[in-house]
Length: 110
Length: 114
Image 1: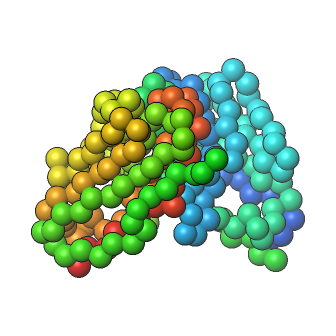
Image 2 (image 1 turned 30 degrees about the vertical axis):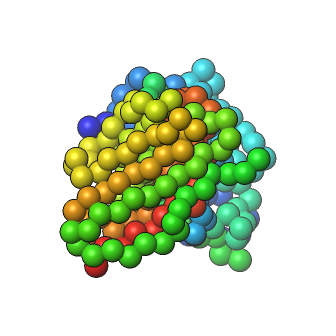
């Protein structure tokens, strides 16, 4: 079964630091790579997404880096804030397929 | 525009019972996907419906079933509940099929099986 491997499982970062979460996938039949953010008691919400024709996408403090040949992509959160404390899920998507990673619980210390 | 709504928000059932969960997608969205979320397992895909047709199904036993109505609302049913079915069940809608599109999630239904 196709899998998405996400690491680390949990992450503690000081306020103002950089949070980095990594994902690796096994199949090349995907062309949409989103990151979702989930707060307790809420459903996940799209944070940022990238398509494989670019290697990097930046939106404010959030950046996706994408390495197509290595089948890896990562989320970088610059100047991490306590309000960023949440669970983050990467996903890979193709036709009728949407596979999520197992999630990373991020805690940003004030 | 109203978001994805799920009812009920919380359910407590006992083993052997069956349960039906409901999802109303964002207006205009034709795709509804269902996921099971448990600690450590992330989001496990159950099935996706588009225009009343099941387009894809995850690796869950036949006790898990679903359907979609002409107004795009969807229901999922779990029969003969087991303790391991305790989880947060999330519904997500998208404008087209889920592939390559943003999914909009509801708040989930928390199912506890005793």
